[in-house]
Length: 393
Image 1 (cartoon, rainbow, N blue to C red):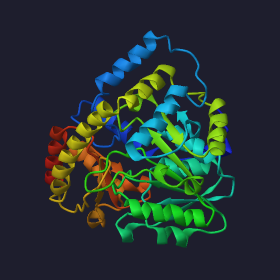
Image 2 (image 1 turned 180 degrees about the vertical axis):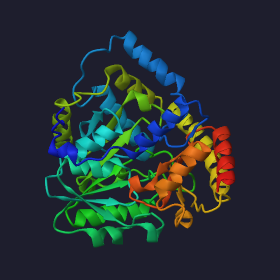
Image 3 (image 1 turned 30 degrees about the horizontal axis):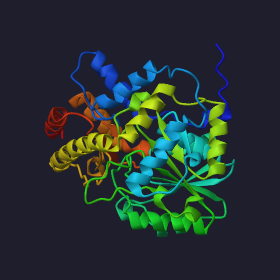
Image 4 (image 1 turned 30 degrees about the vertical axis):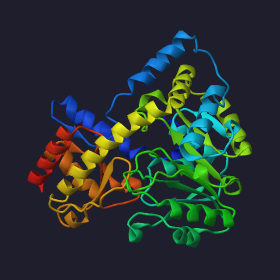
């Protein structure tokens, strides 16, 4: 049987390491093992009931047909109004486009801006999909090392990395996988530095509301218009409202960039599900209720974080800084590397087969020697996992 001639663009892409870890967990579970899965970047909470009810309401209203590729007018207007009420922004609904989740929002933004041969700056550690989108576009990922600054990007690092070929910076704060949060003032300086050099910025704000006090919730949508001309925000309902399976997100960008993204989407997914857009629009209109649900999830994530990080530090060979956001612990296991374990993937494999605890290897995030633990799971699972690891190492 002849091999399939995979296109050049796709052949450059690597499979998702996070999904590979999930598959490994599922295989062991099918064999009857009690597996604790700490790989998934997915809230373990149900979608808030009032949002589910709003989706049913949308169905009852007959919202089962095509919508404009940019999204329902009520959807784009609700995004603009919500940000204005929550953050004091002044962008127009015409600068908003609906997308099928945050991941498609990112694809739309990069694919409409980046050309073959361009350089795209990506701070390490990075979400696994960032360099794969760049590869798909035929551009070059240029990585910025941030370990010396405790995985928090700063403007000086960006300035030093910019060259005449630099087209775009992709930044994610709060960060997946590190959980670190770039301070608001530094984020402004980073974006201003890019604008000074004519470099565009894509801010992945998937975890926007999951910043633990005193860390500040910051969106680049609040920046002055002359700066925002160079910025696209990729937003998502997936993490914020525990709606991963609903596949709904959005972009906020200048009108020409938005129109280009809408044109691209019109030839791919067309638009997100109609009654899901309706539910999200109505949920944002009920801002107090929406933010109350988010606050309850954030409080539980903080409770888990405050227990888990000190507990992980009691495992032999583990070092773990306190994350300021998201719901990940990024554990340095380099003390364990040597004769027994050559790379961090060996440590993860040892945990998988001997403690039936699954985590994601940091190499997939550009950080060999680290492991990502998701605490978007129950305290019971976290406690069991730590006990197993204490007995393992």
